[in-house]
Length: 300
Image 1 (cartoon, rainbow, N blue to C red):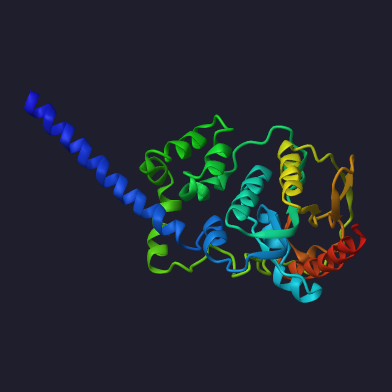
Image 2 (cartoon, rainbow, N blue to C red):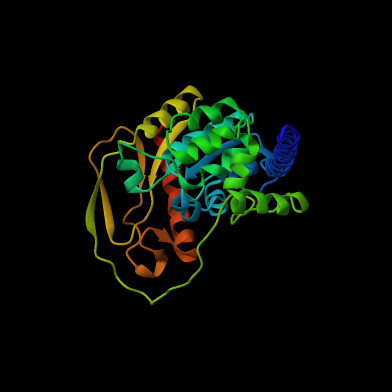
């Protein structure tokens, strides 16, 4: 019996050792790739200083095209938005950006009205993309703020890397294999961090009528992002992207805001109610370049 238990013990040790080697290798290849935005920030952005960065969820990712904005404004920017994330993750992204020794003059936050309005934000769906950096204090500190199961799995990965890699196997292990052979491959964004929804589901031109949507800007992470910007001499700009048939009105004005909620009055430019398509992306980006230049000109 003792010999049997001894063999079982050695087998478990061997199994854990193999799992650890496999998962550490997986995280290593992701950490040295450009596949997800956190690794893209660390490895693909050779430039140190930018005029502006765009932070946000899929709304920021698909609405503001930094290539179009740069051509129209003579500014230099990069889109660091990551789909299915909230303002808490955008705070973490800015910390990550600054931790790489990079800087920006303006931080443009493009978030959904629901996210800006919430008082109790939860853990974002795609936060696992920061798992390759979980041993960095600013990353682990962020996940320590949550008591949810997924946050605990990510935190356990600080000591047992196989916990997160096996749990998020489709999202981490398989991309790490791609990254091992193609480290410059990117997950649905270009070399400036942008992505556009295609011209699909079009039903021709349709004039929109608008209803009012109030916004209170009360997400606690918004103030944290603002404080982080102030500590690093960055001007925070809250950007409200176009929404199909919605006109946002503000219940407070504590932040510098560019409100484009109602600038598109034709359904032709929308992919869905909250995302613009390729045509809308260009229209909005050109207008944003114009308004950003005006905002910068008006700042002291």
